[in-house]
Length: 106
Image (tube, rainbow, N blue to C red; front, top):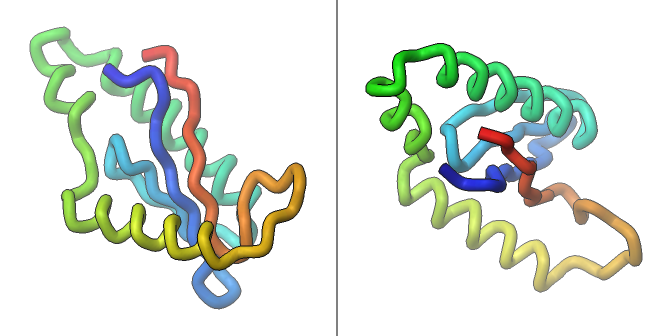
């Protein structure tokens, strides 16, 4: 199982959407920070649930990634935004899109 979990957050109008690429989980909120917190909670609950299953059933849940086409789309969006966004020292996200990893003890 991965030590870090890949997540992407995107602003859509006045709302934000966050997706955990590695576990195919999604949340919505009104700010980047709200979505980051909600996604962190969703991942913790998911990991807790998977750990509660018999070991023979866990493997299929540890490898439940979003479809390849969605992963490619996220990578292209991040790359496009990163290349076109002005750089601000200390920012953890940039203009409407953020990508980050979370440490995962699982």
